[in-house]
Amino acid sequence: MDLAFVSTHGPRRCGLATFNGNLMAAMRAEDPNLRCLVASIDEPGVLRATSRDVRWLIQQGDAESFRRAGKAIAASGADALMIQHEFGLYGSWTSDGVYINHLQLLLEAIDIPVVTTFHTVQRQSTPSMREALRYIAARSERVVVMAETGVELLRSVYGIKSAPLLVRHGVPQVEPRDNDRSKEQMGLSGHKVISTFGLVSPGKGIEYMIRALPEVVKRHPEVVYLIIGQTHPTYVAQMGESYRDELVSLIDELGVTEHVRFVNKYQSEEGIISHLLASDVCVTPYLDPEQITSGVLSYALGVGKAIVSTPYLHAQEALSNDRGVLVDFRSSEQIGEAINAILDDPSLRKRLEENAYTYGRESTWSNVSQRMLRELRQITSTPVKETISATSSMTG
Image (cartoon, rainbow, N blue to C red; front, side):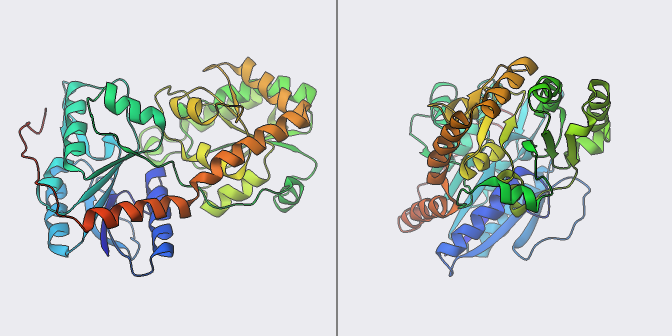
């Protein structure tokens, strides 16, 4: 099978690129005969080396480059197309807030089956965004979401009647183990390790975790908090390192410099797993209540970590049934109380870890890739449904 992908892709550094690369690798492991062709979405004006899988380049924000990519994919002989979708990558907004769906131009140029994974399904959206998502869903043979909440939002907010596939975010297969050995390997022996992962930006809410540290340190002076990841490239381009500088100032102001370490480096999957294995508590203090997918949260579950999180949509679902501890948004007090409760009570920590691991292991990349391949084989062995006509305008 020849399979085309439209997504950001390595070496671009973002969660979608990591996801797409991991999914492709897992699918190839299941089917060595699979040929993957990538149309990679890059930022305007950025030139970077591409991996051998990248066949076409799409310039984010450039509608015509989506049309050209669609024609090229149509001419490639690919049997099906997989799309990793987030609104900001696949369109732009006019000055009066109307969303222009560039992906429609690509889809109009092809007549092969399409599988679209919606990485973001927003509860609050504009009419033009809802129309764009409905068009993409209607043009797709399969729609995939990664959380039960996404299924409900597609029905209630976007009016999509057919049930999408629920395929949770993939995670690597990792056997749980005592983290003392991992701490030793990471130079963290003797510490209780709290960690936050991912590209650093204001929406991560890291300042609220830092403000929780003084109370945690009072009870557990051996604590070290790892802030793992480089600053988000888009934020750096616009604001430089202002957010990281604010965090450093806050750390100094609170007198917890000896208890915080920045790992200011983009992490490979191996790096993420190594740091997670060394962690006692993973914290996702994110500020966006509508966040429906978090790769970091998925990985923490897959490794079997005790997790403290704000109640964004993905966390509400994934951490229910005693798989983690939810705290209010922007509540440093509750974050500190939750961490202290876990560090104070080994039995609580063990219960959270076991429940998290049981849940996460169902979503290994191997299981995800097998599910995707089954769906692809089904839709490529049957006639493609007639492409819907573009009855809506590009602006909605």
